[in-house]
Length: 166
View 1 (cartoon, rainbow, N blue to C red):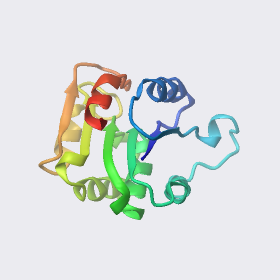
View 2 (cartoon, rainbow, N blue to C red):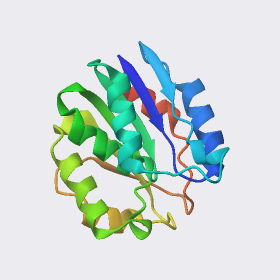
View 3 (cartoon, rainbow, N blue to C red):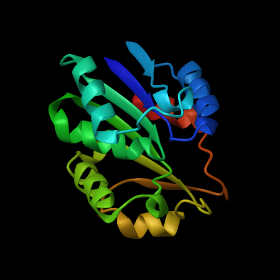
View 4 (cartoon, helix red, strand yellow):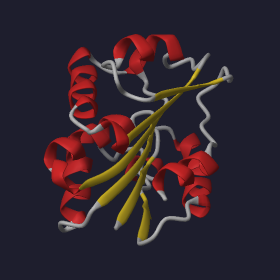
C-alpha cells in the first residue's frame, strides 16, 4: 500500500505536508509530495503531469491519497488514470474559488466515481477558498463531507485521517 500526501500549491503547505506525513499511522509506504516550484520558482506546476508521474510511481500498488487544496485536483487526475488502484481518499479544502470550471468538473466526476466508503471530504465552514456550504452544493449527493468550525484553509485533522485510513 502506498499513501500519497498531496498538499496545496503554496509553500505555506509544506508544514502541513510534513505534519501529516509524521502523523499518519497507515501500513505501507507514506510518500509526501513536495512540489518542485516550492524550491524553484521557475518550475512549471502542471497538475496533470504531476498526477501522471505519481500514477506511474505507484506501479500498480493500492493507493491511499490525502490531499489538500489544489492537491484535490491532482488527486482527481490520479483517480482518472488508475481508478482500480484507489483504496481510500481524503480531500481537504477543495479550492472552488481558485480553479476553472473544467477543473471543477474533473474533481466532481472523479470523486463521484468512487464508492462512498472510499472517500471522505473535509471543508472548513469559513474556508476562504470555498466555504463548507459552497462545497456541499458543489459535490454530488452521497459524498461524505465533514464541516469543521474554522475560518481558515488549515486542515490538521490527522487523528480523523488515521481513523478513516486504518
